Image (cartoon, rainbow, N blue to C red; front, side, top):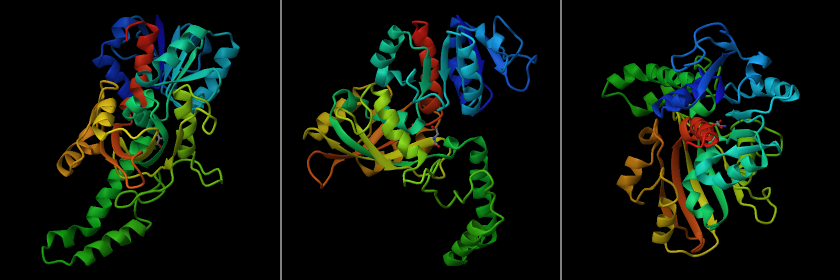
Amino acid sequence: MKVGIVGWRGMVGSVLMQRMSAEKDFELFDAVFFSTSNAGGDAPQVARADRTLKDASDLKALAACDTIVTAQGGDYTNDVFPKLRAAGWKGYWIDAASALRMSDDAVIILDPVNLPVINDALARGVKDYIGSNCTVGLMLLALDGLLKADLIEWVSAMTYQAASGAGAPQMRELIEQMGQLHSSARDLLSDPASAILEIDHAVSMTLLSDQLPARSIGAPLAGSLIPWIHTDLGDGISGEERKAGAEANKILGRPAMGEPGSLIVEGLCVRVGAMRCHSQALTMKLRADLPLSEIEKILADANEWVTVISNNRDDSIRELSPAKVTGTMSIPIGRLRKLAMGPEYLSAFTVGDQLLWGAAEPLRRMLRLLLNKL
Ligand code: HSE
């Protein structure tokens, strides 16, 4: 198979390259690398057959590929994909961007959760396979066992989303904000006799001043949070929150949210000062009053990445944090407890790396599925 790779230098693309190299994926096919800015330059070492970068807008070069994997972003997809299909290209399109996600011709890929949906689509000749929204994907991986057993009536997710979900410039700016806050209080901090309210005042002034770097993020994030992610369509639900119900049901192969047989997914999405792990506090209504031990076993047995963390202080602090999970494939879920609302109500807290399982990993696994090598 000849596989075209676009957007491999961006943040998601770089994580994808790391994972594909680590798993020796490049030994399975001939990779052709494309570039939007450096056509004619040198392709990465892993390109065995063709060592020259192709132009990512060259439809003929793209159409020569059996499969295209792109992490270039939605604008690229919206520009190039329709032209390629209009020119008669029948290859597989594997994409990290959201542009095609809800299209009737596309399947959202999260194989540990929806392999039957993907296999059915492959058998029907579907050619467009799109990675999910990171928050949705990470939640479904964590709840995989309860979903497969159809035990969840509804789930509300209160998210704590990392800066990486907004982009690489936002990650840099978050650190700059942290540095600026520290600078504003450095002298006071170094004096053990200084008053904490003085330190707080200095930091608060910096948070609200024009001096705080906020060009990319648009607001203070270090030492604060942002309770809205993505677009405002005027009806009180953010773009990110709307994706949850829509994508979750599509991934699971269920009717659209609100229709009989659908999963109700609600919540509020919040940006916090974490680097690349999204966390989510979940409240669920189950369809049955199962013992907690049984719920834990169902969750833990669902896939090889989810781990149930005992609901106690030490384990929760040690295991259920962005700092612990970052850069790993692990999907810990903890804080599991029956709630006072009734025996079918369950709380949970889960964390996942939004660049790995939240973005890159499903793409490379889809490629392996096409090659029968998963
Ligand atoms: N929408 C996510 C976020 C990023 O802003 O955190 C990836 O889907």
